[in-house]
Amino acid sequence: MLAAWVCMAIYYLRGRHGLPFFSVIAALQCIQPYSENMLPLGKKRILGTLIGAVWGAAVLYLEYLVTGRGGGIEGLHFLLLGFCAGAVIYSTVLMRVPENAYFSAVVFLSITMNHEVGSGLGIYIIDRVLDTAIGVVVGMFVNSLHLPRIRRKDILFVSGIDPILAGGGHHMSPYTKVELNRLIRDGALFTVITRETPAMVREAVSGITLRYPVIAMDGAVMVDIDSRTYLFTEKMDDGLGAQVEAFFRASGTGYFVNTIEDNLLVAFYHEMKDGAMKRLYRRKSGSLYRNFVHTDRDVHENIINFVTVGTEAEMQAFRRELLSQPFAGRIRTDLDTFGCDEGDVILRVYSAAATRERMIRRLMQQLGAETIIKFGLPEPCADEVLPFTGDRMVKEIKRRFETVHHSGWKNMLRW
Image (cartoon, rainbow, N blue to C red; front, side, top):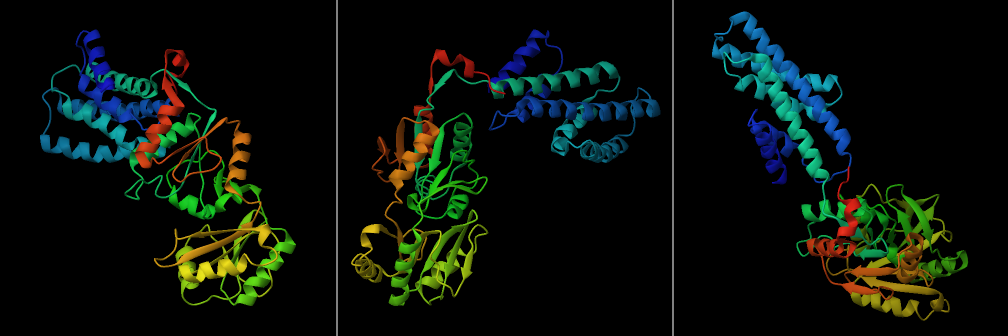
């Protein structure tokens, strides 16, 4: 809206010279969800304008030379324009700016299809180029203009994964993606936490650029999603791992052992049991980010957790028996139904040192935050817990992170 107003205001300031329609169209085409990289984008748009203008001028001058001022046959004119529109698009490919193909074609067609026979050809072409260039500059400027805001970079925002990010409909809205990405880019300390592996994070928040480390596997690991680097891990010591695995083997229960070796998460299993274990495997093994490996050897090293699955009654009974073992004080267990088939319950076994609170505080210290705001289920270390989901969560982050204030005038223009 502002871009359209500015284009029309410039039209009046120019003494109502030119056609503001082309300026408004160009400006609206330059409006993007994100304002980063606006200068490179603007340069490409200007180049696209020139490509379309050069072809438009060439076609009109060719027609002028062939037919004179009286104009030619309309059918041949449109046939030529269709052919040259393809040449315009291919020109952007040759000049390595294919993303401007549409833009260049619009400029070309606006010049060649709206020129009135008998009017000054050179002035007309210059006016169309100027109209479009004005729109590009206005679009870039308006896209980079923001209200003055002060930003709170001392608050760590922590969200659960699903359905917190997605909202009640379990589908992440475009607003959530665009606005959350913008807030993160502007410095909001936002991360996610989950009981699942980092693979689930990649799948669940596709479209969100997570700049800061995420906490996965219920606080057992902190990982940089982009580089797939495990920054911190709370592993079981080898002796405890051997005891827990011996217990699992003796019970005859099917299980997975999640380990991190050479910065790679691998889920080992000895025997694929029919029923709940096979269902869980089929659900998880389709991901490119999960690595399941069958092995006959005992796994005692680099263990993050043990995972087994069954009915609620089976898992409750197995948990009670597990917690009656001599090593019970050195482990932590968790029951969960998320990510498995209906009627199944997942039991995870961690080292007692692997806690969500401990990993969140470690991340808080690493990022230099002073306050923790958690969205979703309560977190003992959070200063405030909010039940907001989806768009409402993003709006709350925006309200807390950036407040409109005159002292934030330096943040008004962002390229």
